[in-house]
Image (cartoon, rainbow, N blue to C red):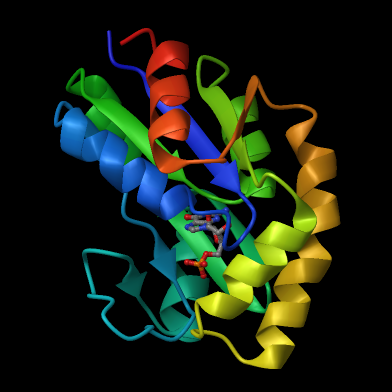
Length: 181
Ligand code: 5GP
């Protein structure tokens, strides 16, 4: 039986690092690559980090019902392709979706067996410092991301599990425990 885990967390919380470390240790888990309309950051690769697509293409995918879920986040759109998720689950593969909290709750409605995990920062101050330290966003983008944190924390109350990311090693071992590995 394949397992589906949906991992959400506020921007800058370090969920990407935690997931990367987890995948290094557990190559039998696959990470779904989402589509987004946002600009590529330095070092990001098309087809690896995201499929970077235009607004027009994104709208076409919505019209053709090609997303299992999609959401607008901080002025950009992000979506998970339905065929990819269905193919992995049909093939018995274990899949991780790294998506925002709204998308995660939508997935749970469609696929109730999915396990939702929220990765939280040790504190909001720490999160703000991490977000600024990344130097990848403008001040305006950072403010938007900080504003969405409240909503995400509210949504996370409906999640199955919450992990505090104090250190990467701790967070990864908590993930392994939740996933019974
Ligand atoms: P970032 O721009 O920092 O890569 O991602 C911003 C937010 O979009 C993060 O919370 C990330 O988890 C979320 N996200 C990435 N891909 C998807 C997706 O396919 N669907 C949804 N709903 N959110 C996504």
